[in-house]
Length: 297
Image (cartoon, rainbow, N blue to C red; front, side, top):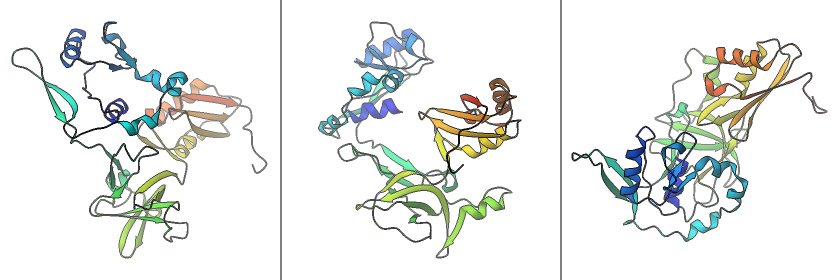
């Protein structure tokens, strides 16, 4: 998705290829589209020979020298007209040769926001690369949704002031199954309308667009999955350890710092595998005799 959006933002044309296709077929498709560059990753790098110019997208994220030469300001000079081609898609061809059809750039890129408790999407913003250089807003509420930005006293904040986002409307959930305690904390009635406390901090700019600022609690998002770090910590505390802290590191991994003298990393990993889904299992366990504390404990 990142590669697709990058190609669109620079005004180029993208064509999705399947890693399940054989090498010969992939080479034929690349030749048919006259592609000048193929984005690859560790699972697909062996699919293309040296005659095809390729770029390892994983290297772009990890190579400091590559990142240093990226100029976001140059995007403002990209001119995109509706008649330009957005992407090319292949369909099966009756002659044995796949047919390629291309679509113009009337297709918009939408940035949508919404938790599962609000039926996934409740706000939207159509990406405008000439304006959204500094950051992409989460936009305006969808039809039949309401969004309030409130402070800790449930009072509305002023323009550009940060506050917690409350979502109301047709898609707000009915509650957590058999967890009335959590439901009571998550839902609130305001002016005879039920609103969901998202826990997300946002601000509104002078154009009425919502901008995501972060979380009010310790919930994080990793690889598209919402994760409560406290749930992982509680799982680990059910072992012989006496204390632990779980953090997100480098937007890609979970690290668990545990206080114990009689447990090893393998035991902790097996325990987590038995009680947590794969995306919530820490990648690294750091075992310490005592967790360092500040003056306030």
